[in-house]
Image (cartoon, rainbow over all chains, first blue to last red; front, top):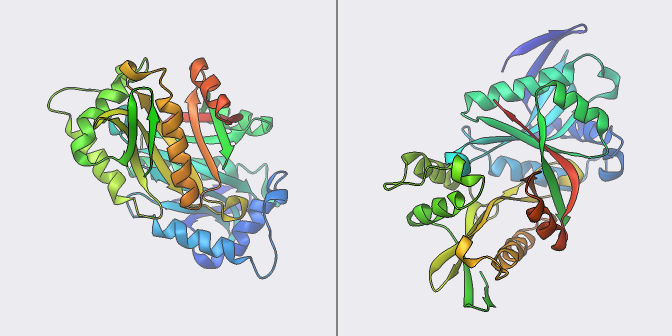
Length: 163
Length: 163
């Protein structure tokens, strides 16, 4: 993985391991929607460890389903879930899918999000993906502008159903 | 997998195997957008077989990434890609994701699509998923109405970027 710099120093990128889970869940909860969706307490609920193990069970080196972390001075300041999904459509095009993008509220405005997305795209290209995709809640207007600046196009409806 | 009936007889559902690829690609190409995106010829381009093998390599019994087929009288009349994606957000919620939904143009109007989606939801629930999601091109207005009738909500923007 590459390093990048911002005005607070070097940002390092790496995949998460099990020990990172409390810091990741803290980030997931550090968000307008996430604060009502997550249960960040000590000890961390076992469901998060089980979910991490499930992610690992479906990850391969070629087709990861992993959290990518942005760190400054070894402190985790950003995360996203990166999933490579093989499929048949569009002549068997490999897709990269992003989920759970979060930047620590203490570190916003430093382009860490942009660098983290850029790193996830670099990894995806190296793995052979030619499309990156995600869904974002329609109420997150600031996020849409951010992603549009990075070249994403809101060409699709993101449809969901609780089952 | 379960069977269902429609006015042309029993519909059977099963996961695709490698021998089904020509029929699946024919379905993917039997579509306004798909016809320009796929290369359905005989022999089928090797990229489809490679993509199928990649899907198999990231499938487990608990977390499949497979094509689900609808068949009548052993003829494949519909397909969709079903991918179970483990993740940390929303307390480690397991998501089911759908892609590449197609019903043979000869068999539309027989509720095969509805039954195929319903079967994919049943499988996803059995595997522990509590959310099913997909993106659909904003120009596919008929498809949106179809999915909204099935209880899907267009709550998200589906953002994509070619890389």
